Amino acid sequence: MKQPRSAQPQLKAFVRRIEVTLRKQYGVPKVAPARTLLDALVETILSQNTTDVNSSRAFAALRRRYPRWRDVLAAPTEEIAATIRSAGLANTKAPRIKAILARLQNERGKPSLKHLGDMSNAAAVDYLMSLPGVGPKTAACTLLFGMGRDVFPVDTHIHRLCKRLGIVSNFATAEKTQDSMATLVPKGRALSLHVNLIRHGRLVCKAQRRRCDGCVLSGMCDSAAVLHRTSS
Ligand code: SF4
Image 1: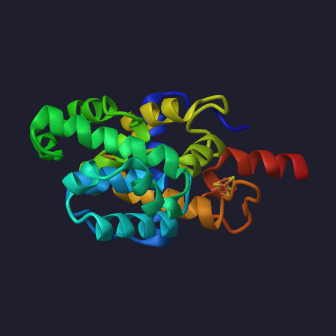
Image 2: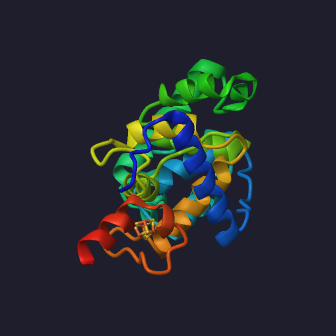
């Protein structure tokens, strides 16, 4: 019978094995860096609850219409919402983006997040989460993709896989999973594990249909063991 992997060193070793296995399967992810940290934050906000294709289209449209962030700040919210319509939830995302730009303008004299460059990861996450509508996942994505910081965001795919693999309890919230993973992800491997877990969640361990036969993680997965026990 499988022993629970509750001890922290055991869990860390387990997560390390998952990272290595997925890296062998999918390779080392290459991600085009965002032009600025603020670009990364706005791109992440646009990507909430939609596909990468739709959010990229919305971001390109936004930058085409307003080449500088101060142009977005000066534009009517309805016009911004119409411009980013392809990202969905435009009536929520447009005022959120504008409120963030206004806060930065008031606080820093210009819409910029350059000052985060001098902060520790923890301080930068706290600062980003103090901005309107920015939660832990958006803050971590901004630092990972905008600055190459070694912080690990948990999205819906990663949250699902962490539960199925037995890294966190089935009752864990996404925020709790992100807290747990912050202490478990091997140093320097946040990008690799983040991108490859999402890839695995989209291709193999899907929300509705998991393909445990042929999954490279099946030998170490709690859910695969349960399925095997119940079907034999
Ligand atoms: S073995 Fe099944 S449940 Fe476990 S990660 Fe693979 S597809 Fe998902």
